[in-house]
Image (cartoon, rainbow, N blue to C red; front, side, top):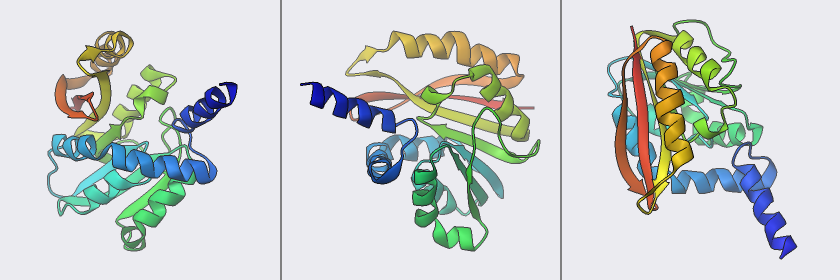
Length: 208
């Protein structure tokens, strides 16, 4: 029983920062698991012509690949803390990286390695759970967005009809107020599709 518990602990620990061969496996598993909400999230971006997109927590690069298949997107930069998944994302998007339409960067949401006003869109799918300083993360996202740029943050807030109190408290009493304090406009919570019985939602906002 201890061995099973330890194995589960090791696997759960991989989701925050996947490493090694197991991390590569987890990365591809997340690609399969999150297809529904990834496609839905990209629709929420309402992409226009010549978009410059940052994905925070790009994982194995599946959302990057979908974004790059859109004619309205000029360039996509994926950022992740996992060097293992950066390698996976690089392989998945090798052609567009060679064409200089894509780039994968090692980095942290709390200190984004980019200049001010760089991206017209910022997107994050299932990475907010691992942000240690939500206020700093929101401020950094606001900083790197262009005027009129927007952000979409996707996460799950329940399963099988049961709402998760901790996540919903974070959304309503931390994330949304912090975005409004950072001068994001049109901040809203949108309910999305069920994915493996998990309830998907997004929080979005626009920088003036």
